Image 1 (tube, one colour):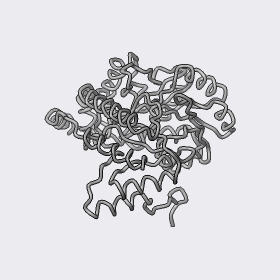
Image 2 (cartoon, helix red, strand yellow):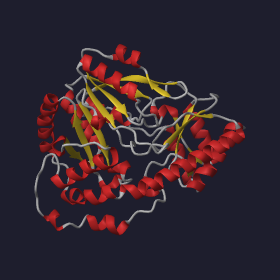
Image 3 (tube, one colour):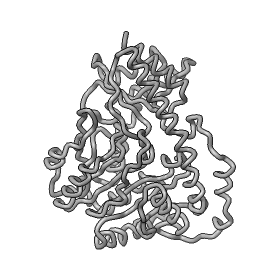
Image 4 (tube, helix red, strand yellow):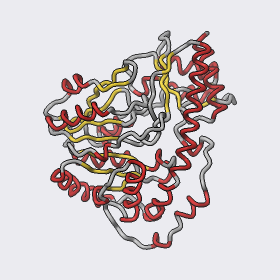
Length: 388
């Protein structure tokens, strides 16, 4: 009765089952995996945000496939003020999420069975999106050697006649590594040679730990490039469901891509009016919330390093941006078994590396946006466990 594309394993994983058991026992779990900023103790201007959703203009139905001009202008202004990039608003398409943005671009570039090259390790969402669009993912590794690097020889080996694009995450989740300038040049050469689209996920772009501005792929002109981002991370408002695709590259290819994307967007018309009219206000809120988040991230990172220096168990891998840290730990069992035992014995929840498709065991991933006290105590318990 059901399609093969949804033939996923629907049972809960062992870590989820263990978490439910620990919580049902009444134990307080210290969650070092938190990704929901609205539950991380941040201070939002609730009155301003809620008031922005009450525009009288929302009562008028004005279907715009790419999104309302005022909302797209707000996104273009973000790129101008935050990243020094002038974007034509006609090159922007609003979506309800970056996931939907991926879906649009996958549909644009790929026939059933075509391939996209994706980084490994990275966020596991890609697999589900690809399954739904009948696209095959082929991974290329990020290599760690005093920092993360793209493995270009592996890209060359992975490309086939069915390859349609390369996905980069800038900075990567969970490694926190940005694509470097020399890597961008190599990417453009690679994509140009093989006539591939370039998909850049930049949801964590603004969270550079050194405070410096990293270049957005939205300025890339050498090859057809689709830059995805949204309010979920930029303004820490995942519930508001505002995201976008910024298209750049050679003008003739932009025009052809946008003509097709316009029809895809017109088919769904997924963006609702209240959130579009609120977008200028919601994007404006990013400045205050980003400072809070960066202060939290850097404070927790410093606390993690302090405790690691004291106990000397595990190694924190280099991280440049984003909300996560990766620890390399001694391999005494699988990462999943380690995470389950840590949860059961210390009531601390971490993500095992295999959730993010690390090549082997010996990695755990920690969220850096956890409330400071929870993070400090959770790390202490986790390192005590590893040191035992």
